[in-house]
Image (cartoon, rainbow over all chains, first blue to last red; front, side, top):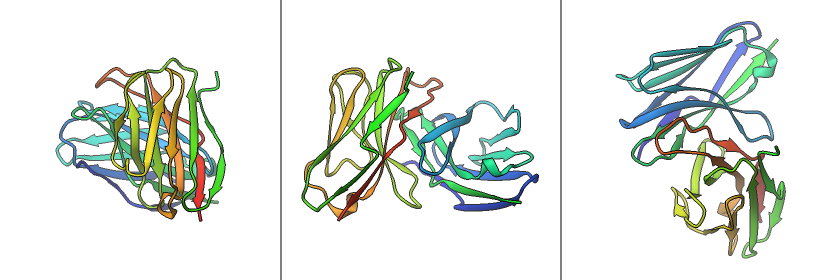
Length: 111
Length: 115
């Protein structure tokens, strides 16, 4: 089946930029998503990108998509302690119409 | 608008016991999903319902059953709980349609422990 991979941990200093990376194998991807999960809560959609786009910017968030390498990244500018959470990359497969989630990256922001 | 609600929030079961996790959404969404979240494994789809009256297996359906009671409600049943089913369970819903931008709205989760 299709797969989505992420690194498990990222630690950054407050005020720095964070970059969370994701790779996927699906060739029929339509949309790719970034979800945020705070402790004890469900997932909330942060942003998404359509598969024919290269970049999307939304305030402090920048999503870059390299379709050739099947690589997605999320950059958070001026990272704050409130950004500490688990970030999930997800791929919406055209073939199955289901979301395939990565393992999640735990972002820790220290002062 | 409550969004997606799940009950209970926490549950402890003994091996072999049964229980039903409840999920409801008030957004008039067509599709509903049940996921389980395990450390280091992300979210895995257990069952989904593309519309009222239909249900289909996801990636990890063994040991579970579901019922799409009506458009609002989608329940997940564990007939004979096993320790391997210790997990956090999330219900989600989306309006669809197929292949379009499809934000899934998630409930707050049910943390289940099977002893």
